[in-house]
Length: 216
Ligand code: DX5
Ligand code: ZN
Image (cartoon, rainbow, N blue to C red; front, top):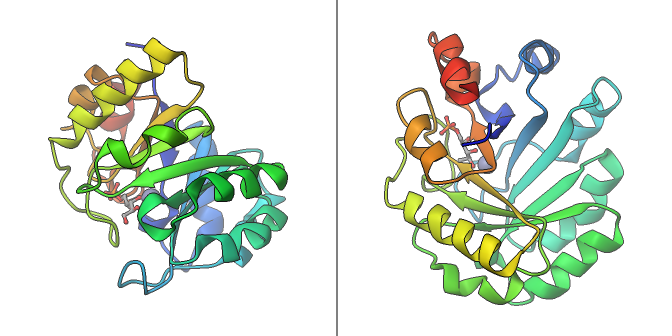
């Protein structure tokens, strides 16, 4: 299995030291940085806005991957594009107009991702697959880091991989939530392209073991 892209999630970093978090991302050559944006409505927690992306943009060449766990995600597209996001992912559960929203993100010159909560079936996004650059499979219920991966989500990853190769779709498949040194082998076997790691990267005494298994 080829090596998945690592996308550390800033959610699990020390919020008093984002610069140090970015330095750790660079030190371990993680090509992406995942920004978990929560609005306190779509999920109970509130994290941060586009200013955090903007504050780190000129300090890094890393691919900035913004995950909007927000209602009315389209209200935030321009601000995050302006701040320097390279990808903006919104939740299929947060809109009735996903195809139009993907077009809006592309018009801003940014890659577009669609995210699925654990209970949301793939059938909810099947018509969108030819148009998106990323499909984010939530392997925990969104709203917090440090949870355990829901194993059945790997079936979604496998089916997305099958559709991707069958129809030659362009999207990356990303998994988000509960990925660590214990779950990474099953995740790689399912055929994942991008792995989000919050606590496994920023709050893990076994970080080196995780990275070794990710990259083996
Ligand atoms: C949860 C976020 C995930 C989470 C991942 O709402 O979308 O990105 O922060 O954190 P870990 O890797 O600790 O499960
Ligand atoms: Zn996320």
